[in-house]
Image (cartoon, rainbow, N blue to C red):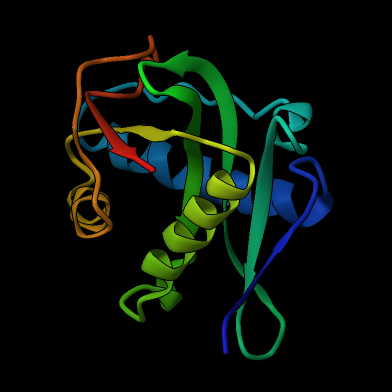
Length: 157
């Protein structure tokens, strides 16, 4: 059974997973002749009540993914949190763990009092867009200046 547990976004395992995540984005963007800008997160943005960072572990306890939420500027309904750095190692994909991770992060956002959950992505990440849609997110207007993003999604909690 897959398990998710909070950890510091600057822990060694979080750094390892984030490095893999950023590297995969750099490669994917390079194939489109687009430059990907890597920005390791400020770990304090993922510490309650500002946010949380989660590591996903498989049946053997091996780390296989990560994701986090962080508080950003309030939205029209109140407290707003943003999903960031959602990543699963390629060999784990297709098992429903991405949905489980999204549901876990949403539950944690609710516990922190979030009224809205938002995220940004790139149009080339079709599997990610399908996951966001399947978990109730809809397209919204741009809410940030992320140079890597071309689409923005939101969900009222």
